[in-house]
View (cartoon, rainbow, N blue to C red):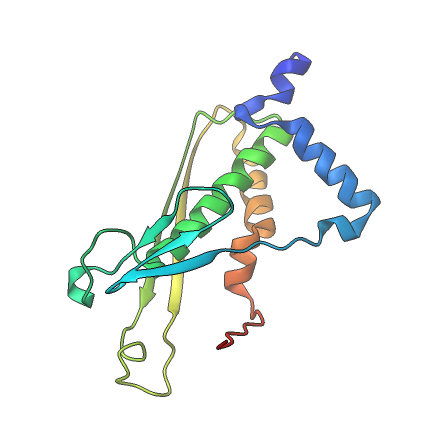
Length: 174
């Protein structure tokens, strides 16, 4: 395997990833980062998330929930965020391990009861009760290497960790 192939396996810039890991290992405070978004309501149940300099990400609700179904709703975006985070983890970790990916697909679904959200139950839980992800990896790599890759990705996913642990949340009215 040539250096060029290793550097760009699975279209991942390993030099950038290794460079970041090296910098954070040398100075752990460099690993403390902040990420954010600004959401602007655009009418009815529609809104747009503004993140850095990217095009706005629209959100809406299905017609059955009173929306106009012009975009995914927030809970769909949440499971999509998990899937996108896992995809990054598989690409980065497979590349670092020298595993070529021929395909990767992650199907996600979650169980959510609307009673609390609709104000019909005051003591309930308005969020997901369970989220499931099914990962399909196409690769000629050894099955044990794929399993180790899977375990590493699941164990290091920032969105996965956020969803599986209590996190401080402060919503302030200004």
